[in-house]
Image (cartoon, rainbow, N blue to C red):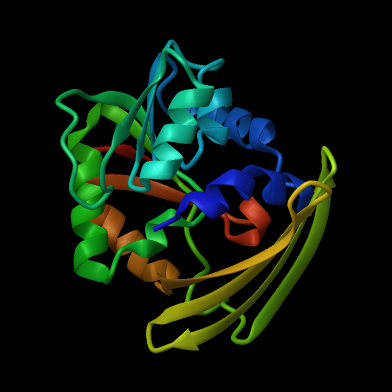
Length: 237
Protein backbone atom coordinates (compact mmCIF):
# COMPACT_ATOMS: atom_id res chain seq x y z
CA UNK A 1 0.00 0.00 0.00
CA UNK A 2 1.25 3.46 -0.85
CA UNK A 3 2.70 5.40 2.07
CA UNK A 4 3.39 9.03 2.95
CA UNK A 5 6.66 9.36 1.03
CA UNK A 6 5.26 8.36 -2.35
CA UNK A 7 2.03 10.28 -1.74
CA UNK A 8 4.02 13.53 -1.58
CA UNK A 9 5.55 13.07 -5.05
CA UNK A 10 3.08 10.74 -6.79
CA UNK A 11 1.55 13.21 -9.21
CA UNK A 12 4.79 15.11 -9.77
CA UNK A 13 6.64 12.07 -11.07
CA UNK A 14 3.83 10.89 -13.33
CA UNK A 15 3.19 14.32 -14.78
CA UNK A 16 6.90 14.53 -15.44
CA UNK A 17 6.59 11.26 -17.36
CA UNK A 18 3.97 12.85 -19.60
CA UNK A 19 0.75 11.56 -18.03
CA UNK A 20 -2.20 13.74 -19.11
CA UNK A 21 -4.91 13.23 -16.49
CA UNK A 22 -7.34 15.61 -18.15
CA UNK A 23 -7.12 13.95 -21.56
CA UNK A 24 -7.61 10.51 -19.99
CA UNK A 25 -10.71 11.58 -18.07
CA UNK A 26 -12.22 13.27 -21.12
CA UNK A 27 -11.64 10.12 -23.20
CA UNK A 28 -13.30 7.94 -20.60
CA UNK A 29 -16.25 10.29 -20.17
CA UNK A 30 -16.78 10.28 -23.93
CA UNK A 31 -16.67 6.49 -24.15
CA UNK A 32 -18.92 6.07 -21.11
CA UNK A 33 -21.55 8.38 -22.52
CA UNK A 34 -21.47 6.59 -25.85
CA UNK A 35 -22.84 3.61 -23.89
CA UNK A 36 -24.95 5.52 -21.36
CA UNK A 37 -25.73 9.02 -22.73
CA UNK A 38 -27.31 10.26 -19.51
CA UNK A 39 -24.42 9.28 -17.22
CA UNK A 40 -24.23 11.80 -14.38
CA UNK A 41 -22.44 10.07 -11.49
CA UNK A 42 -19.03 8.39 -11.24
CA UNK A 43 -17.01 6.42 -8.71
CA UNK A 44 -13.23 6.33 -9.20
CA UNK A 45 -11.93 3.15 -7.52
CA UNK A 46 -8.31 3.22 -6.32
CA UNK A 47 -8.41 6.97 -6.85
CA UNK A 48 -4.99 7.66 -5.31
CA UNK A 49 -4.40 11.34 -4.61
CA UNK A 50 -7.40 12.34 -6.73
CA UNK A 51 -5.62 13.43 -9.91
CA UNK A 52 -8.20 11.79 -12.20
CA UNK A 53 -11.05 12.50 -9.79
CA UNK A 54 -10.37 16.23 -9.93
CA UNK A 55 -11.03 16.26 -13.67
CA UNK A 56 -13.96 13.84 -13.44
CA UNK A 57 -15.57 16.32 -11.05
CA UNK A 58 -15.81 18.81 -13.92
CA UNK A 59 -17.40 16.24 -16.24
CA UNK A 60 -20.04 14.61 -13.99
CA UNK A 61 -22.64 16.03 -11.62
CA UNK A 62 -21.60 13.78 -8.73
CA UNK A 63 -18.27 12.01 -8.21
CA UNK A 64 -16.76 10.00 -5.39
CA UNK A 65 -13.47 8.19 -4.85
CA UNK A 66 -12.44 4.98 -3.11
CA UNK A 67 -8.87 4.47 -1.91
CA UNK A 68 -7.07 1.96 0.34
CA UNK A 69 -4.01 4.05 1.28
CA UNK A 70 -4.73 6.36 4.23
CA UNK A 71 -2.14 8.98 3.20
CA UNK A 72 -3.61 9.10 -0.30
CA UNK A 73 -7.15 9.37 1.07
CA UNK A 74 -6.09 12.37 3.12
CA UNK A 75 -4.29 13.95 0.15
CA UNK A 76 -7.33 13.49 -2.11
CA UNK A 77 -9.69 14.91 0.50
CA UNK A 78 -7.43 17.89 0.98
CA UNK A 79 -7.29 18.76 -2.69
CA UNK A 80 -10.98 18.04 -3.41
CA UNK A 81 -13.16 19.77 -0.80
CA UNK A 82 -16.78 18.83 -1.26
CA UNK A 83 -15.94 15.51 -2.94
CA UNK A 84 -16.45 12.32 -0.93
CA UNK A 85 -13.32 10.18 -0.87
CA UNK A 86 -14.10 6.87 0.80
CA UNK A 87 -11.45 4.84 2.61
CA UNK A 88 -11.81 1.25 1.49
CA UNK A 89 -10.53 -1.78 -0.40
CA UNK A 90 -11.71 -2.27 -3.99
CA UNK A 91 -11.88 -6.02 -3.34
CA UNK A 92 -14.56 -5.64 -0.65
CA UNK A 93 -16.54 -2.41 -0.23
CA UNK A 94 -20.14 -1.31 0.20
CA UNK A 95 -20.97 2.36 -0.24
CA UNK A 96 -24.73 1.92 -0.02
CA UNK A 97 -25.47 3.56 -3.39
CA UNK A 98 -25.00 3.06 -7.11
CA UNK A 99 -23.28 5.09 -9.81
CA UNK A 100 -23.64 5.46 -13.56
CA UNK A 101 -19.91 4.96 -14.18
CA UNK A 102 -17.13 3.22 -12.26
CA UNK A 103 -13.49 3.70 -13.21
CA UNK A 104 -10.34 1.98 -11.99
CA UNK A 105 -7.16 3.49 -13.39
CA UNK A 106 -3.39 3.02 -13.50
CA UNK A 107 -3.42 -0.78 -13.63
CA UNK A 108 -4.74 -0.95 -10.06
CA UNK A 109 -6.96 -3.92 -10.88
CA UNK A 110 -3.74 -5.95 -11.11
CA UNK A 111 -3.46 -5.90 -7.31
CA UNK A 112 -6.14 -8.59 -7.17
CA UNK A 113 -4.59 -11.90 -6.18
CA UNK A 114 -5.96 -14.23 -8.86
CA UNK A 115 -8.84 -14.95 -11.21
CA UNK A 116 -11.30 -15.71 -8.38
CA UNK A 117 -10.52 -12.43 -6.64
CA UNK A 118 -10.59 -10.54 -9.94
CA UNK A 119 -14.10 -11.86 -10.64
CA UNK A 120 -15.36 -11.06 -7.13
CA UNK A 121 -13.91 -7.54 -7.37
CA UNK A 122 -15.70 -6.95 -10.67
CA UNK A 123 -18.92 -8.30 -9.15
CA UNK A 124 -18.50 -5.70 -6.42
CA UNK A 125 -18.21 -3.02 -9.10
CA UNK A 126 -21.38 -4.35 -10.77
CA UNK A 127 -23.29 -4.11 -7.46
CA UNK A 128 -22.40 -0.42 -7.30
CA UNK A 129 -23.60 0.32 -10.85
CA UNK A 130 -27.06 1.45 -11.87
CA UNK A 131 -28.86 -0.58 -14.54
CA UNK A 132 -26.92 -0.20 -17.79
CA UNK A 133 -24.05 1.41 -15.89
CA UNK A 134 -20.58 1.58 -17.42
CA UNK A 135 -17.24 0.33 -16.17
CA UNK A 136 -13.89 1.63 -17.50
CA UNK A 137 -10.79 -0.19 -16.30
CA UNK A 138 -7.17 0.46 -17.20
CA UNK A 139 -5.59 -3.01 -16.82
CA UNK A 140 -2.07 -3.93 -15.83
CA UNK A 141 0.06 -5.48 -18.58
CA UNK A 142 -1.27 -8.71 -20.04
CA UNK A 143 0.77 -11.83 -19.35
CA UNK A 144 1.37 -12.18 -23.09
CA UNK A 145 2.61 -8.58 -23.57
CA UNK A 146 4.60 -8.12 -20.36
CA UNK A 147 8.34 -7.45 -20.82
CA UNK A 148 10.31 -9.45 -18.26
CA UNK A 149 13.26 -7.49 -16.87
CA UNK A 150 11.91 -4.13 -18.01
CA UNK A 151 13.76 -1.07 -16.66
CA UNK A 152 12.25 2.40 -16.59
CA UNK A 153 14.00 5.62 -15.57
CA UNK A 154 12.74 9.19 -15.30
CA UNK A 155 13.91 12.48 -13.79
CA UNK A 156 11.66 15.51 -13.39
CA UNK A 157 11.97 18.91 -11.67
CA UNK A 158 8.98 20.95 -10.56
CA UNK A 159 9.08 23.98 -8.25
CA UNK A 160 12.77 23.43 -7.40
CA UNK A 161 12.17 19.82 -6.31
CA UNK A 162 13.81 17.08 -8.38
CA UNK A 163 12.60 13.50 -8.37
CA UNK A 164 14.41 10.56 -9.99
CA UNK A 165 12.53 7.28 -10.43
CA UNK A 166 14.10 3.99 -11.53
CA UNK A 167 12.14 0.72 -11.68
CA UNK A 168 13.03 -2.86 -12.53
CA UNK A 169 10.29 -5.41 -13.14
CA UNK A 170 10.59 -9.19 -13.31
CA UNK A 171 8.14 -12.03 -13.79
CA UNK A 172 7.44 -14.06 -10.67
CA UNK A 173 5.06 -16.89 -11.48
CA UNK A 174 1.76 -15.34 -12.55
CA UNK A 175 2.77 -11.89 -11.32
CA UNK A 176 5.25 -9.11 -11.94
CA UNK A 177 7.48 -7.94 -9.12
CA UNK A 178 8.39 -4.29 -9.62
CA UNK A 179 11.12 -2.74 -7.48
CA UNK A 180 11.01 1.06 -7.61
CA UNK A 181 13.68 3.42 -6.27
CA UNK A 182 13.20 7.16 -5.76
CA UNK A 183 15.64 9.96 -5.03
CA UNK A 184 13.99 13.23 -4.02
CA UNK A 185 16.08 16.39 -3.69
CA UNK A 186 15.52 20.08 -2.99
CA UNK A 187 17.64 22.96 -1.71
CA UNK A 188 16.25 22.94 1.82
CA UNK A 189 16.12 19.20 2.60
CA UNK A 190 18.93 17.87 0.43
CA UNK A 191 18.56 14.42 -1.14
CA UNK A 192 16.79 11.38 0.26
CA UNK A 193 16.14 7.91 -1.09
CA UNK A 194 13.35 5.39 -0.57
CA UNK A 195 12.18 2.25 -2.33
CA UNK A 196 8.97 0.29 -2.87
CA UNK A 197 8.10 -3.19 -4.12
CA UNK A 198 4.86 -3.99 -5.93
CA UNK A 199 3.56 -7.48 -6.74
CA UNK A 200 1.02 -7.10 -9.55
CA UNK A 201 -0.88 -9.98 -11.13
CA UNK A 202 -0.30 -10.77 -14.80
CA UNK A 203 -3.62 -11.85 -16.33
CA UNK A 204 -4.09 -12.75 -19.97
CA UNK A 205 -6.49 -10.66 -22.00
CA UNK A 206 -8.75 -13.72 -22.21
CA UNK A 207 -8.78 -14.02 -18.40
CA UNK A 208 -9.83 -10.39 -18.05
CA UNK A 209 -12.58 -10.81 -20.62
CA UNK A 210 -13.86 -14.00 -18.97
CA UNK A 211 -13.91 -12.29 -15.56
CA UNK A 212 -15.90 -9.35 -16.95
CA UNK A 213 -18.36 -11.76 -18.52
CA UNK A 214 -18.74 -13.72 -15.27
CA UNK A 215 -19.40 -10.46 -13.39
CA UNK A 216 -22.18 -9.51 -15.82
CA UNK A 217 -20.42 -7.06 -18.13
CA UNK A 218 -20.30 -6.86 -21.92
CA UNK A 219 -16.89 -5.27 -22.53
CA UNK A 220 -14.75 -4.01 -25.37
CA UNK A 221 -10.97 -3.77 -25.21
CA UNK A 222 -9.52 -0.54 -26.60
CA UNK A 223 -5.85 -1.04 -27.48
CA UNK A 224 -3.14 1.60 -27.36
CA UNK A 225 -4.38 3.82 -24.53
CA UNK A 226 -2.69 4.35 -21.15
CA UNK A 227 0.94 3.84 -22.13
CA UNK A 228 -0.01 0.82 -24.22
CA UNK A 229 -1.89 -1.14 -21.56
CA UNK A 230 -5.22 -0.27 -23.17
CA UNK A 231 -8.66 0.12 -21.62
CA UNK A 232 -11.62 -2.15 -20.96
CA UNK A 233 -14.95 -0.36 -21.39
CA UNK A 234 -18.29 -2.08 -20.98
CA UNK A 235 -21.84 -1.95 -19.69
CA UNK A 236 -23.53 -3.94 -16.98
CA UNK A 237 -25.96 -6.36 -18.60
